[in-house]
Length: 378
Ligand code: AMP
Image (cartoon, rainbow, N blue to C red; front, top):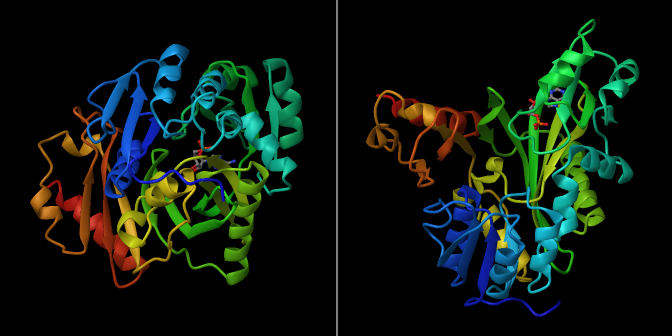
């Protein structure tokens, strides 16, 4: 193993949202210091960090100076440019490496990498210009989904195309490409697997998590989706293949569709901790953020076993629209844990925090998480 980065060292995180905040909490617990860089101040990560640097991600001089002051650079915001990752890499190891970001931040590159690794996905085709769309639709068939290649998340930059729809209207709706056209998957469930890979290639994962969305935003995650041992092994193998093919050091989430015939298809990858993995904070001896820290520091990975059935619900800004949420009512169930990200303004759709709940079984955990959230409106 290369020399590990030990407690007392400085972790540099590009991005300053809740993912960086929860990484910072793990880092602080283990005696590391943490610096964050983003264009904002007073951020969720900055509130916990030792230093909050306010700079644009395109400001390569600022990235250079940032990287000189830290022992390792990781990120929680994946749309950092290759140039910024390269600038950082001149002074400190960047984990995962910039090439992983470069692939994951563009759906066309991501899908091509998945196909190259032999992984199952929905049928897809890269579409660089409107002139290519009719032929692509012909091959993929309808219904289909047209997605912008870059900068899409939480269902933004997507449009569904039905038979007979005008391709030009869809093209305009996503801001005129470049794009990826995908066949619509008739899925039974959406799942994710969050995994960590260390410097020496060791891997752990947190098993299959079931994810339910509302208005394209993650609403509820329930750990330990009860699938066959073959399906669990398949998901694990998909994670291993992705992480090995991309030589990822750090945490990566793979979003999957479970088709009605029981097949697992890869939807997308996120080379960082993931919203669906937040439940690992209470539910696992080493959370996804602990594993990220251990992986990027070159330390052995921790135990990812679940202690009990567990579920998580997101708290969006909408919960604040009438009056401040009733925190005491939500916490009446002792199996409930509250996380708030320190965001100043509660806009509708904005992820403000989450609730994790334990239960007798998966359904009970989900019910208790949802009940606690409903109690916020009392
Ligand atoms: P994405 O931004 O790719 O994660 O897509 C956001 C959501 O849109 C997913 O969580 C799915 O609910 C839905 N979706 C995306 N791609 C497809 C597809 N090919 N077939 C069916 N639903 C999809």
